[in-house]
Image (cartoon, rainbow, N blue to C red; front, side, top):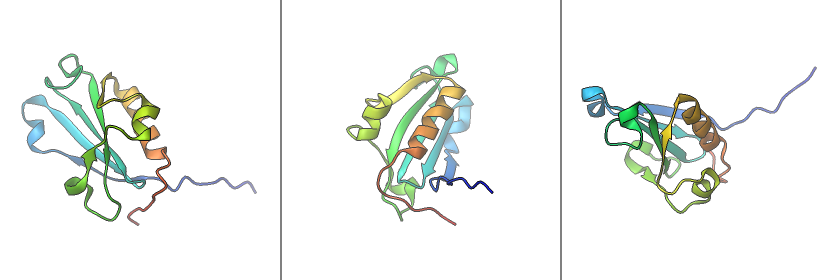
Length: 116
């Protein structure tokens, strides 16, 4: 019987910003088991939001903490260079956002923990 290696990295949680959804704004945060996360937003104040496109910011948080409280946008990390991101990645459609989220989830930070 064939066995396959299971990727232990996974999505720990997602959170919508409740206040942000007023007036048609979309902001959702993703937190992954490798200590990275992403903020995905679409509104008139984001790159491409006025045209229905999304903006993605890469987040990092200390493992074992509440990521909603401790996460910060990162700028000068290897993941930013890997994704070609200076501060945010703008003008992305739904499928491009899904690809970026998968790359962030699978990025090897050398750290790993997840909620069972």
